[in-house]
Image (cartoon, rainbow, N blue to C red; front, side, top):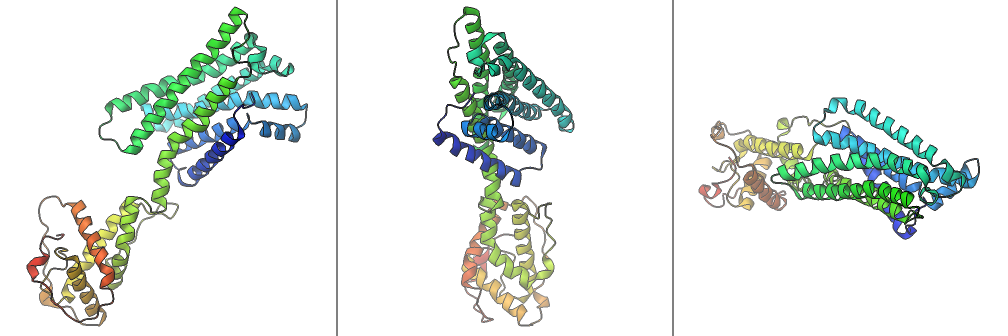
Length: 401
Protein backbone atom coordinates (compact mmCIF):
# COMPACT_ATOMS: atom_id res chain seq x y z
CA UNK A 1 0.00 0.00 0.00
CA UNK A 2 1.31 3.40 -0.95
CA UNK A 3 1.03 5.77 1.97
CA UNK A 4 -1.90 8.22 1.77
CA UNK A 5 -0.26 10.45 4.38
CA UNK A 6 0.77 13.88 3.04
CA UNK A 7 4.47 14.42 2.53
CA UNK A 8 4.36 17.52 4.74
CA UNK A 9 3.64 15.13 7.62
CA UNK A 10 5.57 12.08 6.51
CA UNK A 11 8.97 13.49 5.68
CA UNK A 12 9.52 15.57 8.83
CA UNK A 13 8.56 12.50 10.88
CA UNK A 14 10.84 10.20 8.88
CA UNK A 15 13.64 12.74 9.16
CA UNK A 16 13.12 12.76 12.92
CA UNK A 17 13.22 8.95 12.96
CA UNK A 18 16.48 9.02 11.05
CA UNK A 19 17.99 11.51 13.49
CA UNK A 20 16.83 9.47 16.49
CA UNK A 21 18.29 6.32 14.94
CA UNK A 22 21.58 8.06 14.19
CA UNK A 23 21.70 9.41 17.75
CA UNK A 24 21.06 6.00 19.21
CA UNK A 25 23.71 4.33 17.05
CA UNK A 26 26.12 7.02 18.27
CA UNK A 27 25.28 7.01 21.98
CA UNK A 28 23.18 3.91 22.73
CA UNK A 29 24.46 0.83 20.97
CA UNK A 30 26.34 -1.21 23.57
CA UNK A 31 23.69 -3.10 25.54
CA UNK A 32 21.45 -5.87 24.25
CA UNK A 33 18.37 -3.73 24.83
CA UNK A 34 19.83 -0.82 22.89
CA UNK A 35 20.74 -3.05 19.97
CA UNK A 36 17.23 -4.49 19.81
CA UNK A 37 15.71 -1.02 19.94
CA UNK A 38 18.00 0.21 17.19
CA UNK A 39 17.20 -2.77 14.98
CA UNK A 40 13.48 -2.29 15.52
CA UNK A 41 13.70 1.41 14.73
CA UNK A 42 15.69 0.72 11.56
CA UNK A 43 13.06 -1.80 10.45
CA UNK A 44 10.29 0.72 11.17
CA UNK A 45 12.11 3.31 9.06
CA UNK A 46 12.41 0.86 6.15
CA UNK A 47 8.74 -0.07 6.61
CA UNK A 48 7.62 3.52 6.17
CA UNK A 49 10.01 4.24 3.30
CA UNK A 50 8.63 1.24 1.36
CA UNK A 51 5.19 2.86 1.53
CA UNK A 52 6.30 6.22 0.17
CA UNK A 53 5.41 6.85 -3.49
CA UNK A 54 8.68 8.70 -4.13
CA UNK A 55 10.71 5.81 -2.71
CA UNK A 56 8.67 3.22 -4.63
CA UNK A 57 9.17 5.07 -7.89
CA UNK A 58 12.89 5.34 -7.18
CA UNK A 59 13.05 1.57 -6.70
CA UNK A 60 11.11 1.06 -9.96
CA UNK A 61 13.66 3.22 -11.76
CA UNK A 62 16.65 1.48 -10.20
CA UNK A 63 15.53 -2.16 -10.30
CA UNK A 64 14.88 -4.27 -13.41
CA UNK A 65 11.40 -5.55 -14.26
CA UNK A 66 8.00 -4.03 -14.75
CA UNK A 67 7.49 -0.87 -12.72
CA UNK A 68 4.13 -2.00 -11.32
CA UNK A 69 5.63 -5.29 -10.14
CA UNK A 70 8.45 -3.50 -8.32
CA UNK A 71 6.03 -1.06 -6.68
CA UNK A 72 3.62 -3.81 -5.59
CA UNK A 73 6.44 -5.94 -4.20
CA UNK A 74 7.69 -2.92 -2.23
CA UNK A 75 4.19 -2.41 -0.81
CA UNK A 76 3.96 -6.02 0.34
CA UNK A 77 7.51 -6.05 1.66
CA UNK A 78 6.53 -3.12 3.88
CA UNK A 79 4.23 -5.57 5.69
CA UNK A 80 7.20 -7.89 6.17
CA UNK A 81 9.18 -4.96 7.57
CA UNK A 82 6.33 -4.43 10.03
CA UNK A 83 6.72 -8.03 11.23
CA UNK A 84 10.49 -7.48 11.51
CA UNK A 85 9.87 -4.45 13.68
CA UNK A 86 7.57 -6.53 15.88
CA UNK A 87 10.16 -9.30 16.22
CA UNK A 88 12.64 -6.88 17.76
CA UNK A 89 10.01 -5.32 20.01
CA UNK A 90 8.92 -8.79 21.10
CA UNK A 91 12.51 -9.70 21.98
CA UNK A 92 12.77 -6.48 23.98
CA UNK A 93 9.51 -7.24 25.79
CA UNK A 94 10.76 -10.73 26.67
CA UNK A 95 13.79 -9.19 28.38
CA UNK A 96 11.51 -6.75 30.15
CA UNK A 97 9.40 -9.70 31.30
CA UNK A 98 12.45 -11.33 32.88
CA UNK A 99 13.88 -13.63 30.18
CA UNK A 100 17.52 -14.65 30.47
CA UNK A 101 19.66 -12.05 28.63
CA UNK A 102 22.29 -14.71 27.92
CA UNK A 103 19.90 -16.42 25.48
CA UNK A 104 18.68 -13.24 23.80
CA UNK A 105 20.19 -13.81 20.38
CA UNK A 106 19.20 -17.49 20.34
CA UNK A 107 15.60 -16.43 20.93
CA UNK A 108 15.94 -13.61 18.44
CA UNK A 109 17.00 -16.01 15.69
CA UNK A 110 13.71 -17.83 16.18
CA UNK A 111 11.78 -14.57 15.96
CA UNK A 112 13.64 -13.65 12.77
CA UNK A 113 12.73 -17.07 11.34
CA UNK A 114 9.08 -16.27 12.07
CA UNK A 115 9.58 -12.94 10.30
CA UNK A 116 11.00 -14.63 7.21
CA UNK A 117 8.14 -17.16 7.18
CA UNK A 118 5.48 -14.48 7.58
CA UNK A 119 7.04 -12.33 4.85
CA UNK A 120 7.18 -15.29 2.48
CA UNK A 121 3.52 -16.04 3.20
CA UNK A 122 2.60 -12.40 2.52
CA UNK A 123 4.46 -12.38 -0.81
CA UNK A 124 3.04 -15.74 -1.93
CA UNK A 125 -0.53 -14.91 -0.90
CA UNK A 126 -0.17 -11.45 -2.38
CA UNK A 127 0.75 -12.74 -5.84
CA UNK A 128 -2.80 -12.51 -7.27
CA UNK A 129 -3.08 -8.91 -6.08
CA UNK A 130 0.29 -8.03 -7.64
CA UNK A 131 -0.66 -9.61 -10.97
CA UNK A 132 -3.89 -7.59 -10.94
CA UNK A 133 -1.95 -4.45 -9.97
CA UNK A 134 -4.15 -4.12 -6.91
CA UNK A 135 -3.76 -3.72 -3.21
CA UNK A 136 -4.47 -6.77 -1.07
CA UNK A 137 -7.73 -5.33 0.27
CA UNK A 138 -8.86 -4.56 -3.27
CA UNK A 139 -8.25 -8.12 -4.45
CA UNK A 140 -9.69 -9.69 -1.27
CA UNK A 141 -10.31 -13.46 -1.37
CA UNK A 142 -8.71 -16.04 0.88
CA UNK A 143 -5.19 -14.91 -0.03
CA UNK A 144 -6.04 -11.61 1.68
CA UNK A 145 -7.02 -13.56 4.81
CA UNK A 146 -3.65 -15.35 4.74
CA UNK A 147 -1.88 -11.99 4.52
CA UNK A 148 -3.94 -10.63 7.41
CA UNK A 149 -3.19 -13.63 9.60
CA UNK A 150 0.54 -13.57 8.76
CA UNK A 151 0.66 -9.91 9.76
CA UNK A 152 -1.76 -9.87 12.68
CA UNK A 153 -0.45 -12.85 14.63
CA UNK A 154 2.98 -11.26 15.34
CA UNK A 155 1.27 -7.93 16.11
CA UNK A 156 -1.18 -9.58 18.48
CA UNK A 157 1.50 -11.62 20.27
CA UNK A 158 3.63 -8.51 20.74
CA UNK A 159 0.65 -6.49 22.00
CA UNK A 160 -0.28 -9.17 24.55
CA UNK A 161 3.23 -9.46 25.92
CA UNK A 162 3.83 -5.70 26.00
CA UNK A 163 0.48 -5.09 27.66
CA UNK A 164 1.06 -7.70 30.35
CA UNK A 165 4.55 -6.44 31.17
CA UNK A 166 3.71 -2.72 31.10
CA UNK A 167 0.66 -3.20 33.37
CA UNK A 168 2.79 -5.21 35.79
CA UNK A 169 5.45 -2.50 35.87
CA UNK A 170 2.90 0.27 36.42
CA UNK A 171 1.33 -1.65 39.30
CA UNK A 172 4.59 -2.45 41.07
CA UNK A 173 6.38 0.86 40.39
CA UNK A 174 6.95 2.96 43.48
CA UNK A 175 8.67 6.30 43.18
CA UNK A 176 9.26 6.84 39.47
CA UNK A 177 10.94 9.59 37.51
CA UNK A 178 9.15 11.57 34.82
CA UNK A 179 11.15 9.65 32.20
CA UNK A 180 9.84 6.34 33.54
CA UNK A 181 6.25 7.60 33.69
CA UNK A 182 6.51 8.91 30.13
CA UNK A 183 7.97 5.58 29.01
CA UNK A 184 5.19 3.53 30.63
CA UNK A 185 2.51 5.80 29.15
CA UNK A 186 3.97 5.64 25.65
CA UNK A 187 4.42 1.86 25.81
CA UNK A 188 0.86 1.32 27.01
CA UNK A 189 -0.54 3.60 24.31
CA UNK A 190 1.46 1.78 21.64
CA UNK A 191 0.28 -1.57 23.03
CA UNK A 192 -3.38 -0.56 22.79
CA UNK A 193 -2.85 0.60 19.20
CA UNK A 194 -1.15 -2.67 18.27
CA UNK A 195 -4.01 -4.66 19.77
CA UNK A 196 -6.62 -2.70 17.81
CA UNK A 197 -4.75 -3.21 14.54
CA UNK A 198 -4.11 -6.91 15.24
CA UNK A 199 -7.82 -7.56 15.82
CA UNK A 200 -9.45 -5.05 13.50
CA UNK A 201 -7.48 -5.73 10.32
CA UNK A 202 -8.21 -9.49 9.94
CA UNK A 203 -11.73 -9.11 11.34
CA UNK A 204 -12.68 -6.55 8.70
CA UNK A 205 -11.21 -8.71 5.92
CA UNK A 206 -13.03 -11.85 7.07
CA UNK A 207 -16.35 -9.98 7.39
CA UNK A 208 -16.00 -8.60 3.86
CA UNK A 209 -15.16 -12.05 2.52
CA UNK A 210 -18.02 -13.82 4.32
CA UNK A 211 -20.65 -11.25 3.36
CA UNK A 212 -19.45 -10.81 -0.21
CA UNK A 213 -19.13 -7.08 0.31
CA UNK A 214 -16.11 -5.10 -0.87
CA UNK A 215 -13.61 -4.04 1.70
CA UNK A 216 -14.69 -1.02 3.72
CA UNK A 217 -11.23 0.43 3.10
CA UNK A 218 -10.00 -0.84 -0.29
CA UNK A 219 -7.26 1.81 -0.46
CA UNK A 220 -5.98 0.56 2.91
CA UNK A 221 -5.86 4.09 4.28
CA UNK A 222 -6.78 2.98 7.79
CA UNK A 223 -3.96 0.43 7.81
CA UNK A 224 -1.51 3.00 6.47
CA UNK A 225 -2.40 5.62 9.07
CA UNK A 226 -2.35 3.14 11.95
CA UNK A 227 1.00 1.71 10.86
CA UNK A 228 2.43 5.21 10.49
CA UNK A 229 1.23 6.36 13.91
CA UNK A 230 2.53 3.23 15.64
CA UNK A 231 5.86 2.72 13.89
CA UNK A 232 6.84 6.30 13.01
CA UNK A 233 5.32 8.21 15.93
CA UNK A 234 4.53 5.95 18.90
CA UNK A 235 7.64 3.77 18.97
CA UNK A 236 10.17 6.60 18.33
CA UNK A 237 8.45 8.71 20.98
CA UNK A 238 8.99 5.87 23.45
CA UNK A 239 12.69 5.47 22.74
CA UNK A 240 13.41 9.19 22.37
CA UNK A 241 12.97 9.71 26.13
CA UNK A 242 16.13 7.78 27.15
CA UNK A 243 17.98 9.21 24.13
CA UNK A 244 17.31 12.78 25.27
CA UNK A 245 18.51 11.94 28.78
CA UNK A 246 21.66 10.29 27.42
CA UNK A 247 22.34 13.15 25.01
CA UNK A 248 22.04 15.73 27.80
CA UNK A 249 24.45 13.67 29.89
CA UNK A 250 26.87 13.28 26.97
CA UNK A 251 27.10 17.03 26.31
CA UNK A 252 27.09 17.89 30.01
CA UNK A 253 23.70 19.60 30.17
CA UNK A 254 22.25 17.29 32.79
CA UNK A 255 22.28 18.28 36.46
CA UNK A 256 25.41 16.29 37.28
CA UNK A 257 27.24 17.79 34.30
CA UNK A 258 26.28 21.30 35.40
CA UNK A 259 27.61 20.64 38.89
CA UNK A 260 30.90 19.43 37.42
CA UNK A 261 31.25 22.58 35.32
CA UNK A 262 30.61 24.82 38.33
CA UNK A 263 33.20 23.00 40.44
CA UNK A 264 35.81 22.72 37.69
CA UNK A 265 37.62 26.13 38.07
CA UNK A 266 38.14 25.66 41.80
CA UNK A 267 38.97 21.96 41.38
CA UNK A 268 41.54 22.80 38.67
CA UNK A 269 43.31 25.35 40.91
CA UNK A 270 43.33 23.07 43.93
CA UNK A 271 44.59 20.01 42.08
CA UNK A 272 47.24 22.13 40.33
CA UNK A 273 48.43 23.24 43.76
CA UNK A 274 48.38 19.68 45.15
CA UNK A 275 48.77 17.42 42.08
CA UNK A 276 49.74 14.39 44.11
CA UNK A 277 46.16 13.83 45.27
CA UNK A 278 44.85 13.34 41.72
CA UNK A 279 44.30 9.74 40.68
CA UNK A 280 43.82 8.35 37.21
CA UNK A 281 40.19 8.50 36.06
CA UNK A 282 38.76 5.38 34.47
CA UNK A 283 37.05 5.88 31.13
CA UNK A 284 34.78 3.72 29.01
CA UNK A 285 35.77 2.34 25.59
CA UNK A 286 34.60 5.59 23.99
CA UNK A 287 36.94 7.65 26.16
CA UNK A 288 34.10 9.06 28.28
CA UNK A 289 33.72 9.17 32.06
CA UNK A 290 30.41 8.71 33.79
CA UNK A 291 29.32 12.16 35.08
CA UNK A 292 28.32 10.80 38.49
CA UNK A 293 31.76 9.20 38.92
CA UNK A 294 33.45 12.38 37.74
CA UNK A 295 31.48 14.51 40.22
CA UNK A 296 32.29 12.14 43.09
CA UNK A 297 35.99 12.18 42.24
CA UNK A 298 36.02 15.98 42.00
CA UNK A 299 34.47 16.40 45.45
CA UNK A 300 36.85 13.87 46.99
CA UNK A 301 39.90 15.51 45.39
CA UNK A 302 38.74 18.97 46.52
CA UNK A 303 38.49 17.74 50.11
CA UNK A 304 41.86 15.97 49.93
CA UNK A 305 43.56 19.05 48.53
CA UNK A 306 42.10 21.16 51.36
CA UNK A 307 43.55 18.75 53.91
CA UNK A 308 46.99 19.17 52.31
CA UNK A 309 46.73 22.95 52.06
CA UNK A 310 45.74 23.24 55.72
CA UNK A 311 49.43 23.21 56.73
CA UNK A 312 50.08 26.32 54.62
CA UNK A 313 47.30 28.41 56.19
CA UNK A 314 48.05 31.00 58.88
CA UNK A 315 44.41 30.94 59.91
CA UNK A 316 43.36 28.76 62.83
CA UNK A 317 40.36 27.66 60.74
CA UNK A 318 40.36 24.12 59.47
CA UNK A 319 40.55 24.20 55.68
CA UNK A 320 38.74 20.89 55.50
CA UNK A 321 35.75 22.45 57.23
CA UNK A 322 34.04 24.36 54.46
CA UNK A 323 31.53 26.41 56.42
CA UNK A 324 30.45 29.88 57.36
CA UNK A 325 30.92 32.63 54.82
CA UNK A 326 32.08 31.01 51.53
CA UNK A 327 33.82 34.25 50.45
CA UNK A 328 35.87 34.37 53.66
CA UNK A 329 36.69 30.70 53.39
CA UNK A 330 37.62 30.91 49.70
CA UNK A 331 40.03 33.72 50.59
CA UNK A 332 41.77 31.52 53.17
CA UNK A 333 42.17 28.74 50.58
CA UNK A 334 43.60 31.13 47.98
CA UNK A 335 46.12 32.46 50.54
CA UNK A 336 47.18 28.89 51.41
CA UNK A 337 47.72 28.13 47.71
CA UNK A 338 49.79 31.32 47.31
CA UNK A 339 51.84 30.45 50.39
CA UNK A 340 52.64 27.01 49.03
CA UNK A 341 53.40 28.40 45.55
CA UNK A 342 55.84 30.93 47.09
CA UNK A 343 57.92 28.07 48.42
CA UNK A 344 57.16 28.50 52.13
CA UNK A 345 57.49 25.25 54.08
CA UNK A 346 54.38 23.76 55.66
CA UNK A 347 53.79 24.37 59.33
CA UNK A 348 54.23 21.15 61.25
CA UNK A 349 52.19 22.56 64.10
CA UNK A 350 49.21 22.98 61.79
CA UNK A 351 49.09 19.30 60.87
CA UNK A 352 46.70 17.24 62.93
CA UNK A 353 45.27 13.92 61.87
CA UNK A 354 41.58 14.06 61.07
CA UNK A 355 39.36 11.61 62.80
CA UNK A 356 36.50 10.11 60.89
CA UNK A 357 33.23 11.05 62.53
CA UNK A 358 30.76 8.19 62.98
CA UNK A 359 27.46 8.25 61.10
CA UNK A 360 26.50 8.78 57.48
CA UNK A 361 27.65 11.91 55.67
CA UNK A 362 25.09 14.24 54.17
CA UNK A 363 26.41 14.15 50.60
CA UNK A 364 23.72 16.51 49.34
CA UNK A 365 24.62 19.17 51.91
CA UNK A 366 28.32 18.61 51.21
CA UNK A 367 27.84 19.19 47.50
CA UNK A 368 25.69 22.25 48.13
CA UNK A 369 28.42 23.77 50.32
CA UNK A 370 31.14 23.06 47.77
CA UNK A 371 29.04 24.67 45.05
CA UNK A 372 28.66 27.79 47.21
CA UNK A 373 32.43 27.83 47.68
CA UNK A 374 32.99 27.39 43.94
CA UNK A 375 30.68 30.35 43.28
CA UNK A 376 32.85 32.55 45.48
CA UNK A 377 36.10 31.19 44.08
CA UNK A 378 36.48 33.45 40.98
CA UNK A 379 36.63 36.52 43.24
CA UNK A 380 39.73 35.32 45.13
CA UNK A 381 41.82 33.59 42.44
CA UNK A 382 44.11 36.61 42.08
CA UNK A 383 44.87 37.07 45.77
CA UNK A 384 48.48 37.28 46.96
CA UNK A 385 49.83 36.19 50.34
CA UNK A 386 48.34 39.18 52.13
CA UNK A 387 46.72 37.78 55.23
CA UNK A 388 43.37 38.92 56.46
CA UNK A 389 42.07 36.75 59.23
CA UNK A 390 38.54 37.99 58.75
CA UNK A 391 35.81 36.91 61.15
CA UNK A 392 36.45 34.71 64.15
CA UNK A 393 37.24 31.07 63.70
CA UNK A 394 33.90 29.85 65.01
CA UNK A 395 32.14 31.47 62.02
CA UNK A 396 33.51 28.65 59.89
CA UNK A 397 31.80 25.96 61.93
CA UNK A 398 29.20 23.81 60.31
CA UNK A 399 30.86 23.16 56.95
CA UNK A 400 31.77 19.80 55.52
CA UNK A 401 33.67 17.51 57.83
